[in-house]
Amino acid sequence: MRTFARVGKDAPLPAQASALVTAALGYEDALFASRLPREQWGAEGLQLLQRALEASPADDRRAMLLAAIGRAHIYGGDEPRGRETCAAAVALASRTGSDRALAYALLATRVGQMSPEFLEERRETLELAGEAARRGDDIETELEARRLQLVDALEEGDVEASDLARRHAEGLIEQLRRPLYFWYPPMWRAMRALLDGDRERAEPLVVAFREEGARWHYRDVLPVHAVQALELHTQQGDPTPAVPLIRRLLEDDPARYSSILAAALVRSGEHSEATELLDQTLERGFEEPRDLAWTYMMALRAECAAALGDVRAAAEVTRLLGPWHGHTVVIGAGAVCLGAVSHYLGLAARTTGDVAAAAQHFRDSITLNATMNAEWALQRSREELDRTEALLGSANDRRNS
Image (cartoon, rainbow, N blue to C red; front, top):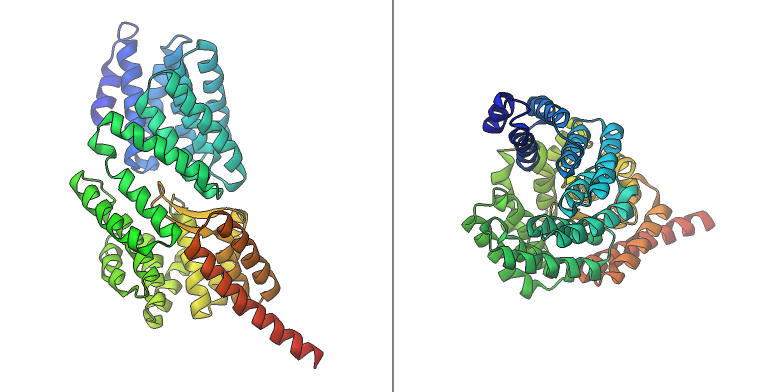
């Protein structure tokens, strides 16, 4: 990024406008991929992009610059301006006839569609982006589109479409032969085996992902392995082997991993420390960190609140996670899918005392999990519905007496 910035500042115009455009896009793409804080690095990137835009004619590169500027505004907190700029980028790319620029602009547009109400729109955007990248013979951009299609289809509970996108993405990875992507297939296959509740199939795949992630230097291999291991060991009946894995992560980022550790401890029957961790997380605020693991963290907080009887935490889960009703819980690029969000809304509602709402949430989760053939999630939702209906029956008996 520093090198891109230096080139962008030093490029004499108009002779080296092309170098400026390359530097500006390179800086923004590197910032996007690195996930470095925008408040520290974003301003310089926007300055480069604006300078490059002023020096560019109305061509495909200008469309890409507009898309990068729109994405930067969205990540910088100005979503309306970012979405408007991305829409202008898509329109310009369509006029230029550049499939490469169109795919880039559409992928930037998706960044502004992450709220749950935009899920259908996101899926349409990605279909268009994937097809544009395919027409433009841009394999790497097509892979990014197919990878995101896998995640969004899974979030909607459309397992068939998610599997199709996964197979397509795996084929592109094989075609590219770039080690950067080699860890994706074992991660996705482990996720699918866990979603199916097939413990025998899942166990070697969870190990294979850890080995491939380490071999190809995937920086989040340990966190992803930890959450997959937690689900695997839980399904096997003893989650305690996952606890030390997660505890190692807690030292690096307590805000991110305390909820996972609390859930692992709750599942292991160790409620005292889990209570402390949930209290600390609630004091920091359930709103943050808002990233691709947020719904997963909220689901685990619902689980902890129910096990520990924490009404305040359950109410906060209900308030924040409610808009995701009808979706599934997916973490990251498809590392784990826990099944229907409604299951966790049911846990939260029952903890706050709204037993009737909880029962309906569990019925909804049973419907979605059954549609997905998510056997492990389906079994848990049925068990929780039985518990909830027993509570409803007891309440009715008390009223009648």
